[in-house]
Image 1 (spheres, rainbow, N blue to C red):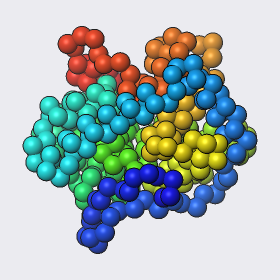
Image 2: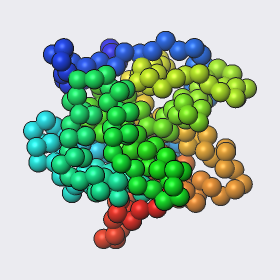
Image 3: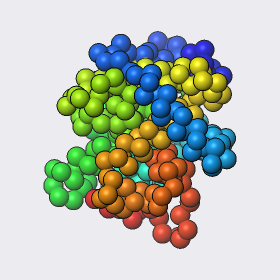
Length: 289
């Protein structure tokens, strides 16, 4: 990955080598013209907000938090208190997963996280196993349970990426969700507006292909530093644009994310780097199903 300034953090399996997420060959093409349009708007918005550096700094801080708590040695002391601190920064999961994690128990959750991060199976299997292996407690029967499973997928995706952001692409559902054919990557699919279904697939390599394509386009436009984080920020911007168009005139965006007219507030929320809670009440333990 020549456009990454740091080498991937080593995560070894039975083979003894560092795990690498190989890019997948896609059945569709990404559209450079769409990128150019969105990138121009991205730069305009960033220029009004002090540039990309504050976002990179916030994501680096998040990475350091995850890396310390989720190191092999750190996991030996990893408990629910440590996990709550991490879940607090995972917007798609923070309001849904805590009852399931708490009911599963500290020791079982620790081993589930250990297998997700350091197990010998392929990373896609480990992520699916993490989301399926924790009993899902949700209201409204099977519908509520499905919501919890999806939130557990998002949690697992962020544990992988923010522990080792060079090595693993961000595989959250807002980046791409094959089940709903939605996500930031769809915004760049050539002719995507005319497709009912987008056959990207859900293999980790799809996310890796997407972030490499974005990073390469950024480098062509002079933005090549910190791609492991800047790509996240740009994709969050693209998804926020999609949501804003979808909810135009309906108030959905402000209701769900509190955008209040700031085009970057939704980006901060998606990435879990929005303002810390202002009360002692936990956003993790105050669960909404």
